[in-house]
Image 1: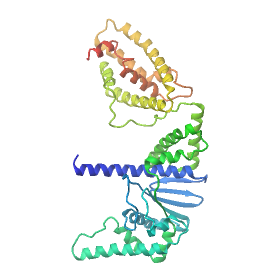
Image 2: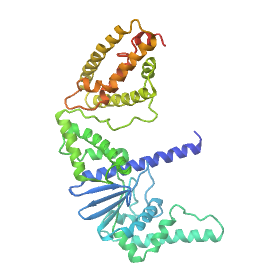
Image 3: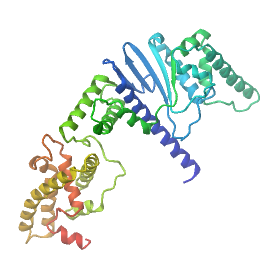
Length: 405
């Protein structure tokens, strides 16, 4: 990989992690609140916008994929970019009813003037002076460079510096009085564990599962929100209802269709046997496409169940037997009826059997558990069985596939 490509890949990874950090941190905030009327949104006035008890809290989050991110200082680009965002938002805010949070996984040096922002009650006067001095230094350096016909430095932060200097001294102080900084915050990889730690009312053995399933639900809500397929904000009441539903499912041993609304990765490639089975009966592209989709969902669901409870292996195996029995009855009829038929007729019969697994089997075969209504498990499990040669569609699939045709 060349340096430019590696740099772009690194940048893309960092951007993706940064967005998911926003999402996870928003969930963590809402989980820890005790205010029933709280609601939160992603990427509105700020990375995260929280409304609770008549207050608006805006969060700017700074994530790093570095094992040892550089400390936040008065010279940090992230600080001045954040200032620019907040200053631009001031006309839309009632500053007296707003708290501005800079959340970072990095640390702050104990001797830095920024330490004042870690204590809501600390005096900000010295910090205003220090930030004004730094902003003036940046702007003066750019002026000197411009006069010498050199490229002006600090392109990544001068906008924030300029916006800060455009405020009066009292406006700067009032702004910083509403600012808090949260250094050494958990990374995106640590947030799930942090969320699980808040579920003291949940049995210890269920806490991690509740957190994992809640994050999956939350991810979908964020995507729907950004796509405008739901309200732009998520309320704490909605979150509480989801937590209660997950806990109830776990305590009652209910199986939940966790992949019903999740799409398989675009680059997912199933075992080649799936396509070979369908090709034998001259299946159409849409037959293959939906088979791949449902096989992925069923395979992922099986893996999830087994990861959460190894005892599920017995239930999965028994249900596979039920699926094979329903298939076997229909397959026997096809084999008997195709004895004297030409290959095209055999393919047509096999194609009908394949499509039966998609269109009819989910309503004919009993569900794997009481209350289960997701069709993908039956459809996809038949494809899993086909990959393993436990079922097939062509009347002579075993012979033809063993011969490598």
